[in-house]
Image (cartoon, rainbow, N blue to C red; front, side, top):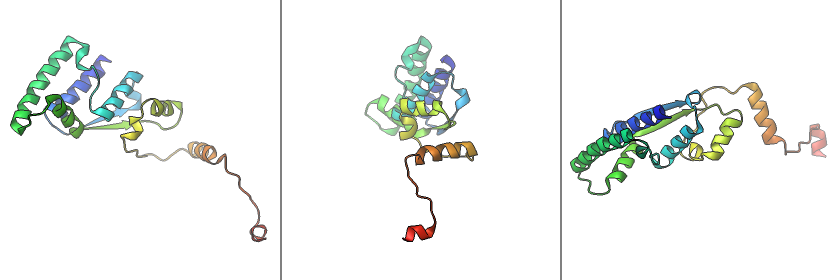
Length: 158
């Protein structure tokens, strides 16, 4: 988790303070804890991770350094509002998160239930063809409540 949070802090520095557009690619195999998914959910929803900088002295120092750059950017841009709001706005503007999750199985379904920003704040793209078994399973699930009359066309006309 420490490495993950260090990565998030670096991303926030790059996107919020340095204002560089950045893509963060997260593969399902990279996730070691659901706390990581919770942090990603928070980033997607609000642009920040609660208590990220308060978790250690090192993180608090990182925030001081980041906020010094943010103050300089606010002055340069003529922004006189809340610097935290400015910072989070720049993170949201410049950070793009790409999630590569397998949609088959209970893990994805549970994550979507627990972390709604994975659906609400994402565009979902399918890049691989679905396995035949998955297509059949989804079709059976979706159409199991339908009653179909199978007969000849002549019977339908009568």
